[in-house]
Image 1: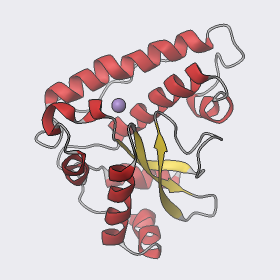
Image 2 (image 1 turned 45 degrees about the vertical axis):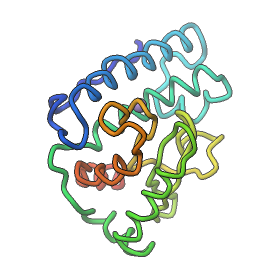
Image 3 (image 1 turned 120 degrees about the vertical axis):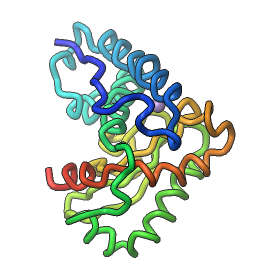
Image 4 (image 1 turned 135 degrees about the horizontal axis):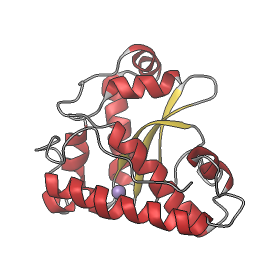
Length: 198
Ligand code: MN3
């Protein structure tokens, strides 16, 4: 049983003007599909075949092809679910309460945006849930994520933002900060809450 490209629950143009349809289509059909295909090739015939995608993040990352493509598949699968047309504007429920404890929503936006804007080169900004239920902002290079033992900061990702140029270059060119600011218009906070409560 190999991994497959997940279907999106919205149309490619549904997130405009924040994320344009062409970027969504190429990102999903080309970039994400390549991570899926390369991950399947990398684990075929190994002890990782048949393991869950989460388990592969935790145990397979000593192999570069698994780290890069397994991370790519996990990160993008999560990312698509965290986006929604119109967005829900503000955190809800337990996530809202935990964000209050780290300084409130405005402080969180500032910290998360800084993590996204200052991640040099390609990578991701994250909000993670710690084992004690608290939340924290972090970032990772390339297709790493906080489930991987190699990550500076461990935790369960509940919000992630792709800051690779392929995620924004057609619409924003070199203006990563504008893309990061616009991301807050399309966050599915109900999904973030669902991930926190898992
Ligand atoms: Mn990407």
